[in-house]
Amino acid sequence: MADRYVVLGLAPARSRWFGEVAQWSHGAALPIEFVKCVSPTELTARLASGRTFSAVLVDAGQPGLDRDLVDGARAAGAAVIVVADDRTNAMARDWTALGASTVLPATLSRDELLEALATNSQPIRRGETLPRDADVDADGAAHWRGRMVAVVGPGGTGTSTAAIALAQGLGGDVDNGGLVVLADLQLHAEQAMLHDARDVVPGVQELVDAHRSGHPTLDEVRALTYRVDQRRYHLLLGLRRARFWSTLRPRAVEAALTSLARAFSVVVCDVGADVEGEDDGGSADVEERNVLARTALGRADVVIAVGSPTMKGAHSLGRVIDDVVAFGVAPARIAPVFNRAPRAPRHRAQLTSAIADLAGPAASGDLPSPVFLPERRVDDALRDGVRLPGAIADPLVAVYRAVLARTVDTAPAAARHDDDLLPRRVRPGELGAWAPS
Image (cartoon, rainbow, N blue to C red):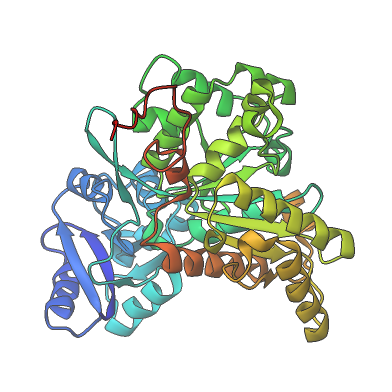
């Protein structure tokens, strides 16, 4: 199916350029689907409908063109292109400071419009919608559920940075509708530091607490995050102290992550590598301490395991993958990633062979080939709060899509919690008795 740009238009009825763009669309002179809106209210409603749009084309003289409208369009993943008439001095206004992607003259040509769309937005395949699955509550009510990806790894390997890069790459994808959230689910949460967050609330504690005795709306869930404009995703801050895990109740954590998946197209979880539970060590407290990682990994559609390209780093990454597989995640859903990888093909081949040997027999044959992230100066980008290099974000997005495409028809990791699929203890006499011959 061919790609085309899906564009919302808003302008006074007699605007000449408005009619010309409609004619170019209907006559197939441009690869765009042009959807006319008669008011800012209609435009806002279409942006909130869940459909994916490439851009919003709006007349500078349109009443209602303000910061709120521009921010709403950008939050939905659509670029804002302002068409201004220089006779009304509209061209003199700084529309980009208001949030617009670019400004075109009212005498725009087809080539100018196509170039602006190609530069500031992304085409959409026909029939493409937000990548969500239907989720069903215990009461039978159906809801949308976004994708969930967990980024895990030994300490000091750049797991949190990889989670930022992945969220940035997915946030720039128009298919996700501007609804990507990076959730800090580490015990020792550091995303607040990496984002220079001045406030430490609200965060995951408030989100979980809101689900202990209630059902927050999607808007209330999104309000507990804040948008990182430079990288185009939302951020859910983590625990303020590691000891505060004791305030998290397992069922409330499950409900909180479910709400996140309903409120956002993709949830990127920065999680710890410890998944030990009561069945492993006999301690219910340890299982509750690891509830964030266990719940996120159990629900993840994709797990990205990050390690360092050293002897110890490869060994630690293999151990993490083995633990995650033992926890119940299918090996085909796990993508090994080596951060700061060497360039030499021989060294990369050695790492590939090593991780295949170290991941354990349970993952043998099903584990995808590792992804190698180059050495880049990410500390400067984190310090300045700007976008991370595409050389780091793009491979992570590519492997996420590859794993998702390969496993889209299989059950998610959360299926391991289904009572019909897991072995369970039986009471004496529950299975009946042999009938006498």
